[in-house]
Image 1 (cartoon, rainbow, N blue to C red):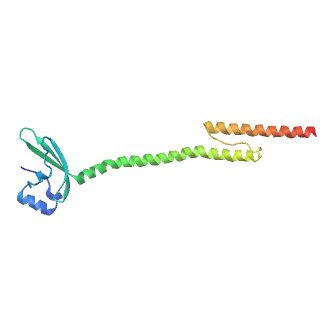
Image 2 (tube, rainbow, N blue to C red):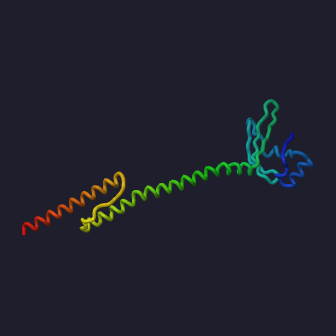
Length: 168
């Protein structure tokens, strides 16, 4: 059995000294054993003070295995670096969505509030103030209908007043 760690600087000092003095520790192969009738084994292990994701693959023909270990903090760092642009995009979409919602609701609610105040004034008998709502689509159609109603009520009241004046 043989093994290669690359730079031992990333491990704790005691482990690095042991590897330099005695070579690759054979007990590591037992931490992630290859299951019988399996060709791949993967496990998170602790070696030399570091968390490592060890992947073992059987070698054809000689019943041996090759193990490759990846430092978990390297994996975590790579995942975080790849997630940052995604998180930034999500935050941007959220902010843009809130801004669009505010803009759209303002474009709908402001004319509706104004139209509500006008209809409340009409309900209280104020027929002299014309409906002045500037909007689009259904809101403008509603404003035109309220204005038409206001002028029709105003005309009806004027006719009633004129009839009462004639009949006296």
